[in-house]
Structures are given as structure tokens and as C-alpha cells.
Amino acid sequence: MNNRLRVLRAEKGWSQADLADRLEVSRQSVNAIETGKYDPSLPLAFRIARLFSQRIEEIFEDDA
Amino acid sequence: MNNRLRVLRAEKGWSQADLADRLEVSRQSVNAIETGKYDPSLPLAFRIARLFSQRIEEIFEDDA
DNA sequence: ACCTTACGTAAAGTGAGCTTGTCATTAGGA
DNA sequence: TCCTAATGACAAGCTCACTTTACGTAAGGT
Image (cartoon, rainbow over all chains, first blue to last red; front, side):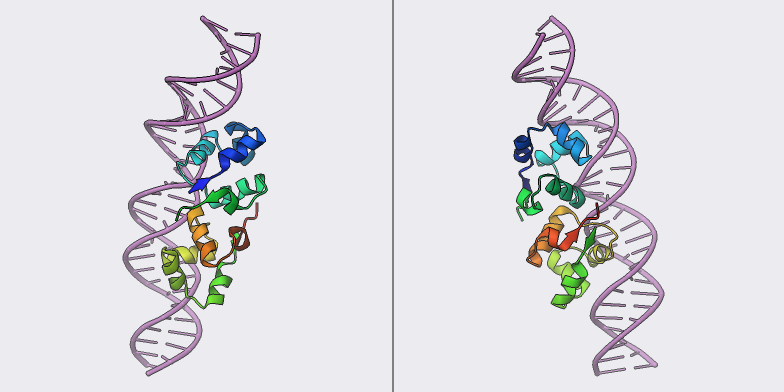
């Protein structure tokens, strides 16, 4: 599961900690998702999509 | 997190077991998602959306 | 040289997504 | 009446999504 989170975050000029605050998750969770260590839960994916005003499929892309 | 899974499945005339086979999950997982016991993982949400040729946001709707 | 910010990462713990297995109920068909 | 299919529900167990805490490092500013 690839994602464009790092790019979207950079466009906003946010640090991982900034993004983590807005998503109400830990900075480490943001880092883990960006570096592809694991996929977010569906509710968190919704929050991310809403924050960037995009569809989930525009941000996340599953390989399968 | 509400979802339209039961309706979509009914439109196809599939049993929960039929859908579970196509999604490669257990019948209990389909049942639990339909009855709102928990949300699917993001990869599973992608599989569901692809199976019904709809976007994730068209099938799942988070309350938050 | 020192401080701060940002990022990566690791260990340990909790909770949710998913499994297999089982049982009860309802409805239909032979 | 019996058998089967479909569904709902529960329990126990596993993996992983996520947490907190913490440490190392690289870059910039003073």
C-alpha cells in the first residue's frame, strides 16, 4: 500500500508532528505510515482524506 | 462507521458466504462488518470498493 | 560549542481486525 | 417432517494498528 502522505504534508509545509496533531495520532504513527511500515485504519484513512480534501483512493494506492 | 454492504450484496444476490469468498475473508468477518461490529482494514475496504466498482466513500460513511 | 527542530527507529504494551469453531434460529424445499 | 441454506451471535486466539517512552542523528541558529 503506497501513499502520497509525505508529498501532501510537504505541500502544506507541515512537520510530521504538525500532521499528527491534526489527525490526533502520535508522530510515530504518521512516520510509520509515511515510511510504509503499516497501513492506517479505515477511520484514520478517512480523517487523512478529509484533511487534504481528497478521496482515499487519491492518497492511498494498494498494490493488490 | 455506517456502510451499504448489505444493500450492495443483496443487489448482487449473494449470500454472506458468497461475498466472503470473493473478498477472501471469513463469513464471520462479512457478517461483523455488515452488522457494524467493527470496521474493515484499509486493504479490505479497497477490495470491497473494487468488487462493487465504487469508491470507498460511496460505500462507507464515517460518523466523525 | 550549544540548543532546538525534525526525522527515523526500537521496545513494550493495548485494542481492534480477523480467524476457526460452535450453536440457535428462521425459512424453503423434498 | 426432515434436511439444508442463510444468518446472527459468541468465544478464544493471533496478528497488526497504534500507543507511549525513549534514544540517535543531522541541520540550522545563536
